[in-house]
Length: 333
Image: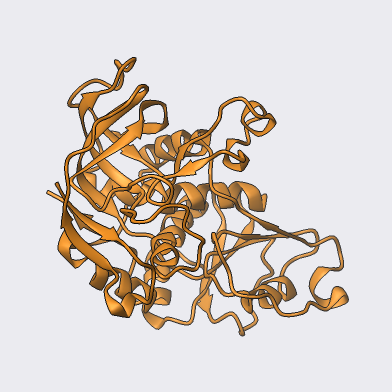
């Protein structure tokens, strides 16, 4: 099978992914073989390829927003059925028995493995995945439209939950890429007035088309104080900006898997009045199932730019340079 493989981390500008031809993998007990049609691209893939994260496995095939059809069952698997269309997300598997897994916080499992990081991912024609960790794809979504829901959508949904934003409240979004362009649709559906902070004029225009109440840069003072905010950009210097305009008792949720260093905070200006700063770590299967059901009911419309598998390096560099509006996806077949 064809795949884009990372053998040695480094700058995206050096085209670190190599096109390889390797054997089709065999599913083991509890696993299935997925024939992939589309794989979304994510900022986490950039952090993986550039070595911002300590990689447990090399070489590795990145990619975790995977859509395809079930090609083969491993021992003990009968569902989903052969030929059924399913998707896979960042969370690949957990131990299922620790205190985190037993209390609904499997995203914090110490033994969790992640797709495209610990196990080969979706920048390939096939992938082996645990049958219990894939998601059925609703008929209303094409493969291309569904792919961004599987990470950008799920993380955006969890970030909204973690932020504690209430229906009709003012919500701030910092950074407006793949995840934020889905989160804003959920928030406006719930009657929220959404303030979008982005350094990109193109991204601010995109936000306005999707119903943003106001757009500007993180250095500007918005017309309303958000009761909750989500920072999608991996830029620690935004944190003081977000906290300084936050309403009393509000929460700023950090939705990135990594972030640059946070500047020092002034207690009175940034944290007093019971303001909360918290991170979003991965996601649970519950988040995935709820987001996919919600996406179908709203319905959410994803904006995607399509690239062939062989152009993964170029597509990721465009994401890094904020030259993609919405989400980017790879066409595998």
